[in-house]
Image (tube, rainbow, N blue to C red; front, side, top):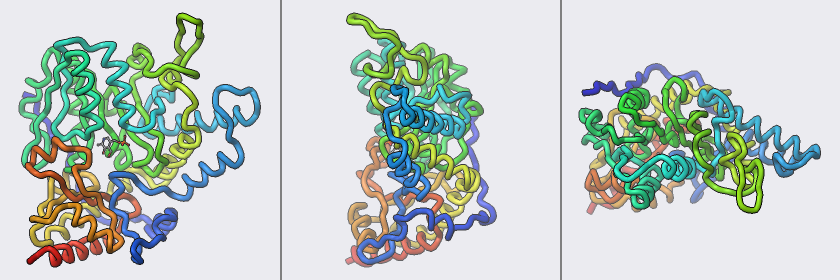
Length: 422
Ligand code: PLP
């Protein structure tokens, strides 16, 4: 049996961050919704963007735009330099050995699909197994279901306990000699559970399986170092980490990426093309067909610079504090049940259900008060089925959220209870 310790976070003193200055960096936080100041508690779905990111993208379009890798003229060379510098920043941010291990994708979803289509179809055969968990976002479930239907690969699932943590007692049995990949989320987008990535990866490697980590919720909120975690693939999205939509990344170990066939064919991903055959470009471009999201990559680089300027430890600490505070305050609301583990084992989000009130009604009332939360199954329907609920409401936090906003959320929820109690 593998003994795995869950990561424990200690919530101590308040971080010495200048919140007024941080909030002032996000122009959207000045807007009003239904004539009230916006309280944005939906960063788990998509985060807001600081002025530095908006400026970087606008500056690029105003001064530099041209296609990358293709021109010999000044603009194209400058655009290419900025685009590739952004890749180097993102590579550095996650502790990658080198920029060529970072493949630009549209988002985390495309990054996982890239692995399923390219690595999966080249390496997996009928009877091979892919291990997932019951807490996966559809992005880390449906691509494997499609692969399973097309190749005869079998899927297994690590179950979840009632408290929202993974049940790991049987992990060694689930990691069978036919298991070729263990793909799991570093942090659940519904339960908030932070999984023990390093230990899960070590168990998978001992069993001879590769490890794909869905970092869509972890990379934006805590320090992540792919070499220290000793994983093989990491998928994440810029729009959840203060960057623009339309760009994400797949990090992969160079030797594994080198051995994988291309994902899509077209311009830029080739070395030579003849009428009946082609050869492939080197990493990372082998996986990047067609004109890429250039401004978005540059915006992603600016987002990473912004996060670094605050520090991922400080961001994580702030979210730990605000989440612990939110869990404490939310427990005051009559009939409210929080999903997932205690504050020490979760990241910066809290999902909950409220007696007989549908999450959409909760979100509707809160919206009328200017408070944005998410309601639904959050693209994790099997997880909700596991708990016997169709949907939940979710408040998710980032560096710009304050305890005062949590107080407004709790006040709004008291109003919901009042409105729906007959
Ligand atoms: N994985 C997790 C855990 C998520 O929370 C999300 C988005 O909410 C995704 C994957 C997919 O991210 P995207 O829609 O940016 O591809």
